[in-house]
Length: 118
Image (cartoon, rainbow, N blue to C red; front, side, top):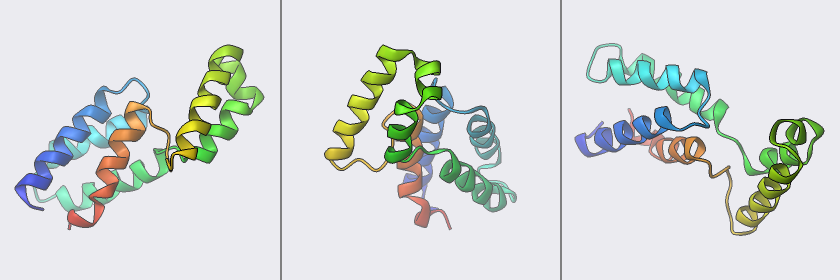
């Protein structure tokens, strides 16, 4: 991986870790990846990190379905769930494929560079 790409991925990984919407599993994978950058373990850990990001990033249709669900309303409350639903539909109509929370935004940026890792 080129230094410029590595620097970008490190920056986005740090953003991911600090995002309140980031899952515990993604934070752990991100932290482990940062700890192995430049080591012999980097390639193996990178593969696991990317798999975690792919499983954690929220597709926009899934966000819409969750915001509309009784579980989403239970977690967010009626007003916030409605606001999330409206926002999600707006960004979907503008072409968004994923949720635009800080964690998903960082994950998407990292995954866009996936082919440059190896």
